[in-house]
Image (tube, rainbow, N blue to C red; front, side, top):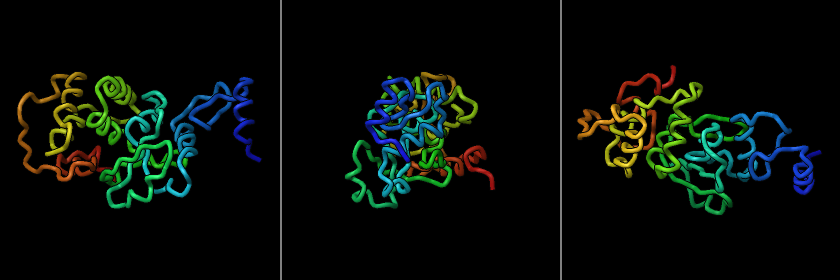
Length: 212
């Protein structure tokens, strides 16, 4: 039988449990894996909408162990879905985006943006103070399979995307030599800009296209 919320709080106060996220707890000393963080985050998302949203941006970075615990969950909603019915989701910030099949992975009962998509979104939408250390951690972990050169190419190949210049400046701070200082001539631009898999198709990057 599951413990009630006050019982979990009491066990944590006695040192018998460690809190992961809001009402998520684990045994003391047990490493908080991405699966455990995702499961804890899933508990904060109403079951009725859990299969319609994707944990993204700094929430996804936290799940991957590359950022601190967020105050509010950042949830991505595919533009093909109706966002209005999800507006009442408490403790969450919703972002309407375009998602591709390779932009999402399943972890701990929750859909999460892939490490590559997470890095792209953070470069584009998160302020530099938080984005830079988070991007460094995402890039430093081989299991995430995020490559700085691909991030630069993906953003450069995407026209008319908001905050593009600021995103390239963030990436230039990580590796100046990889970021072009002038306009980029893109033969086949990506439009619209939200799908990382679309960037892969334009650039011919098998790393992002996935395996057949």
